[in-house]
Length: 451
Image (cartoon, rainbow, N blue to C red):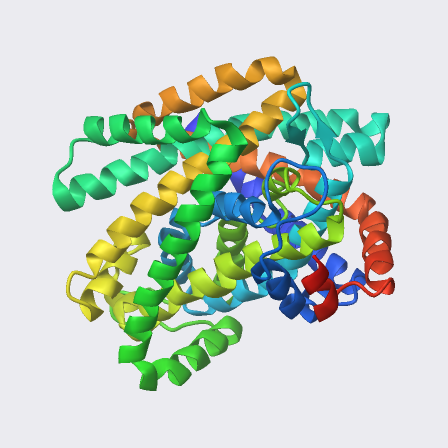
C-alpha cells in the first residue's frame, strides 16, 4: 500500500502538477496586470486601517485573514524550509519566493470568487470556497468537481493538519522535555476542542490573538540572529540567487544539489507552505463581513506574502547565516541547530514555534474540513465532524504516521486539481470584478479611510 501511494504521489506532485500550479499563478498575475504586486501597499493599508468590513458575513476581514494564516503558518515554515534547502540547496529559497510572488494572484482570485459565490447555511453561517464557486460559478455540469474537492478536503485535514501536527508536537516536547505523548495528546485535545466547538467566531478570535503574536515573536528572534550576522547577509542572498540557477556544490555534510532539485523542492515546499492554489484559504475568507470581493482578495493575498516572503525567508536566512546547512541534519532539527548556534537556548525558539504553529494549524484547518462537510451533508454533519476531529488528535500524537502523511499528500493534490480548473475557467470573472472595482476610484488612500 505504501509503495502504491508513493507512486501516486510522485505523479500527483510531479512536474505536471507543479507546472499547473505555477502556470496558473503566472496566468492570473498577467491577466490581472500585476495587480497583486502593484496594489500590495494598498492591501496592507486596508489591513491596518482598522478595516472591519461592511456587509454580510460572520467575522471581520482581518479575522478571516488570521484564521487563514493560523492554518497556513505551520511546521512547514520551520521544518519545510529546512527540508527544501537540504534537498534543493540554498537556491530552493529563491524558488519559494517566486512561487509566492505568483501564488499571491491565486490567493487573490480564490478569495474574490469565495466571497462572490458564497452561500448561507440553515444556521445562518456563511460557507464558501472552491466547492461553492464551482457549483454557483460554473453551474450544474461541474457539480461533480465541487463534490470531489469537498470530499478530498474533508479527509485531507485529518492527516495533513490534525494527526501529523499533533505528532510533531508530541515528538518535539518528548525530545526536549521528555513529556509523554499521552499527556501532549490529551492537552492538545482539550485546547483545540475548546476552541473549535465554539465555531468560527471562537476560532477567528483565537487566531486573531495568537497568530500575530507568534509570527511577530518568531520573526523578531530571526531578526536577532540576522542582526548578529548582518555583514554576511549580502553574501548569503547572493548564494541563494546563484545556486537557484547554477546549483549548489557539495560541502561538509551537504550533498550538493542541481538546479532542477532547487526548482523542484523550492516550488513544492513553497506551495505546501502558503497553500496558494490548493483552495483551502478561501473557505475562511468566504466568512468575512464584506460585500466587496476584491477587498477580501487583496487581504487574502497578504497571507501568501506573510507566510512565505516573510516567515519562510526568516527561517532560510537563519539557516544560511549560521552555516548549519552543511551539517548533514535536516528538517526541524536543522532549524533548531541554526537558532541554537546563534542564541543561548535558541532551540527553544523552534520548540515553541512547532507547538504554537502546529496547534493553530489544527484549529484553522478544522474550519476548512467542517465547511467541506457542510457542503456534502448539510449542517447536521458539523457536530459529528468536530467530535471526530478532536478525538483524532491524541491518536496522532502516539502513532507512526508515515502512511497517513503520504495519504494526506495525495488528498492535498486531489484538492488542488478541481480548484485550479475552477480558477482558470472563472478567471474572466476575477478580471472583470477587479476592473470594475478599481475603475470606480477604489484602491486609493481615501477609499481606505472610508472603509
